[in-house]
Image (tube, rainbow, N blue to C red):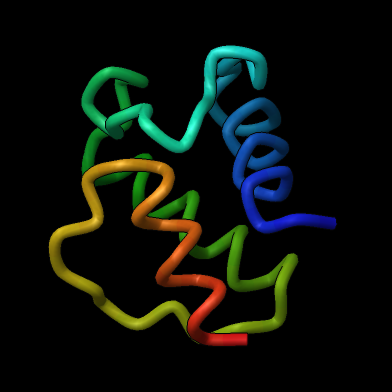
Amino acid sequence: MATIDVIKEVLSDNLDIDPETVTPESTLESLGIDSLDMVEMTCDIEEKLDIEFGEPEGLDTIGAMVEYIDSLK
């Protein structure tokens, strides 16, 4: 499964965000993702992809998040 699809699944399951509205250009702010949501989301992504997310800076779009996660694989 592609990284963006995992992110869409996590957002849909946890935050009831329609996966069709999630694009690489989507900002976390435009999706209504706050800092607590981000923590929960990263934990789920770590578990699904078996990675250690760490505490990256400057991930403000879904595309930036996908690039960062793909660099960890």
